[in-house]
Image (cartoon, rainbow, N blue to C red; front, side):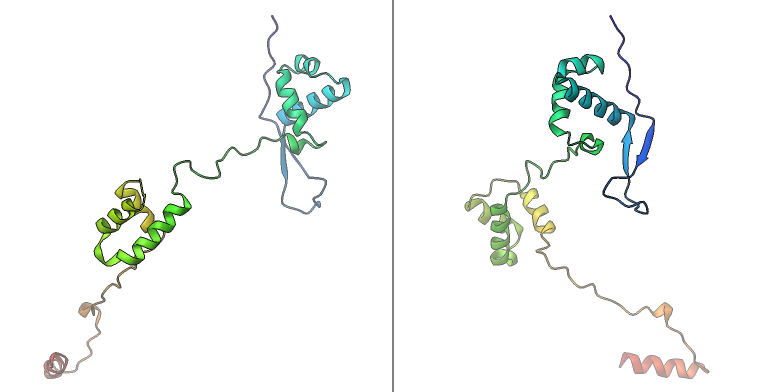
Length: 174
């Protein structure tokens, strides 16, 4: 039994792309692992044998085949791609959002409970809380303007005599 060689990920080399100029800030990070993949793919292409390359580079032939299908001659093509989903599987559908907008526009004065009942009658299957979140997210509610009150503590009082203070107070209250 042979020991598998651990792939080193620590050594990182910054390389400029062929399309980029020397002064460019955008650099590609090519690790030792990516270089190993490139050597394995080139070996498999040269010998036209994935199994032979897999044995030499301590991986599976399926993995070599996967890398070969992605390989376009550059090490950048062998970099791992993002696995981030484009959308959440349980997110509101477009027709549900349009329904909420339409119902909210018509029944906004009657309250959220009325809006929820009307949405349910038209086929909305989600919870009341989910509907409230979407109304908030769609910014359908209009924010009330906050009342401002004069701050008496910040008023600068420059009176020369107590009589002026009384006169000023009487003028403001009248």
